[in-house]
Length: 128
Length: 146
Image (cartoon, rainbow over all chains, first blue to last red):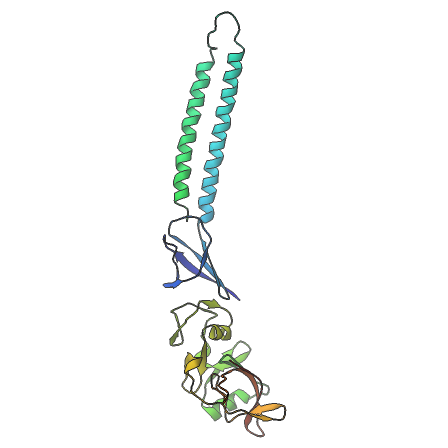
């Protein structure tokens, strides 16, 4: 017979139910923050599941997806710039007109990727 | 009337109308409904889980566990002492169990207390019993020991 109880978990990994600490409890979560959740007791097997882990994971995945999109855009812009350079012919080489724009776009995407990475790192550290 | 003692948790079953009320009148014990059966009033609120440190009756649990109330008792080595009306560790029962064989059953003076020990130092853990109105005694079968 399983029983599900409201529980909490401290940052130190101590699970408590009704104020009583639960020893030898498996904690489903990779984070290091305190959380509220549920304790499942099945015989003498105890498992703690944080209540908001899925929300943290969803946000992290959304940020990762946005970062991958920025990488894709930057690489695409790089490809266009190199194509423009390769198309330049003649005895004296001058940069194609689009090169400055492409470089600016690439730099902008790199900056956005770095910002997103910082946000993901912050979320990772706040996982419950 | 049928009685199942499961690690010191008692379940009474009325086989004919009036048996429970007769038992209560004769013994002075209070029995209350427990699902489709009856049990002692002190046992009706036993939960189906225990947390280390949280009291079961008046005694703190020693194990975090989930299961039927009698499984909770077994996991925490507790029994109900109907003589004192308390839930206690099985090791604290000092009553001597006198069990004699009678054909294919066993007999014992009065109601057998879970935790009582035999002359071979085994403690009664569980049993099934039927009350014989003719002889006014319990006939025991399937006695388990720890």
